Image (cartoon, rainbow, N blue to C red; front, side, top):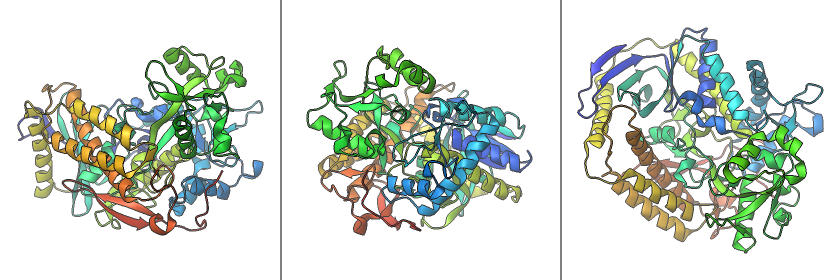
Length: 595
């Protein structure tokens, strides 16, 4: 390690230059799985840095509740990998790239068994076989689970196993501000140690971005305050395209008034959704699937019911909502299969779901869009076709695109760990063949430019309050870019976001200390969210159809002739530049999507 004094004013610590073979930005399931795989196949010889803006075990993957999908018992209940693939293609409204989907279903059972070997306590029946539960849009039960804390158990198992490897260094509470590229190659990442304010440059021959999604650009959301799309913004601001950003998934069951997730497993175990007439209303929208229809369909149905006056009113928040009824399941089953949901309802609402329904409404949850990537997670360059040498992406922040226009529940954890493993292997293979290299002048200039921007931000006085900008961002997205969208609202959002971006250029940081400057971190996150929100709106305005998580009330039908294609967004100084790419179709031609 070589430590040098940073020449930029305002960043008071020393700039430390650290040399690694692989740098992984993001410490959720995808990032940890990548780190573990790279360490395993290199026999502990490659130096691996895992960078997390939180303590790694606080990554948002711990909030995944319901389970992980995979055809664990082929032939039983008529299940096959081909059926899983078809369910995923149809669930994604035919926008998913089918080679990626075929890879997902082929590899998922292997990952489920791998995590069993790591010690994840999958629920089992009396004979000791792993139990499968039903999930929305799936033809048969194929979701493996550990009660309703699946993500927590999976991440814990990964973290415990990472600690076995001396060649993995976890940099907790480091906020990555930039990725460094030169001549189409990844060279490293620049991050701030939040504990001390020290800037660190992580030089490496291979890098993986695995920082999760961006649903926190909405005010009412299931996601943590940390889900701000930082990795997607890193790529976007480095001149790389991002893909399908208009497709945002609204989970049907966000708890009122907080938006805290009530897992789809509650419906998978047999829960009902009721309107103000105490009626299961989904027979009018998805008669064959009812509460086990895909999330986009159920969310639209709930909003439609509320618009017709069949919602209930939450007296404290004023929110319209529906009811999730678990009473008929019985307290014993709830305690066995949904213990955390019971705990959440009792602690936050003073409701025991065994005796009283839970108030819920659709809430921003998952983002299908992300960094434009190839089948193996390789990050694509500015032309959209040429990979950046040495750079991959995995998990929710990478759009391969396996979920298309709408993700099926429990496919997300499969996606995270499969592409985590694949990118870890690819990064290890590249790093093993990379010799050390000098830091060229162009790289040093990029680092100094980035530090200079941070210094200017810290030194600026009397500017815009970042938290006011975030408040207005949330209000804009919740009002105009929600389950249903239309031109007037999207145009208003576009105008407002352009204003917020101009005001952000004058933003100031009130806290100028070095130690745990969360004010600085929040300000950087808010800037990222504003720019990513612009891409959501630009893509939504340009896509004049309804498909999956993108529903236009002024264009209510799917238009395969005009929009069976991926959206690419490139960064400009004002509005994103939009272009399109073909969807990869192998077996399943688009059909009418009914349930």
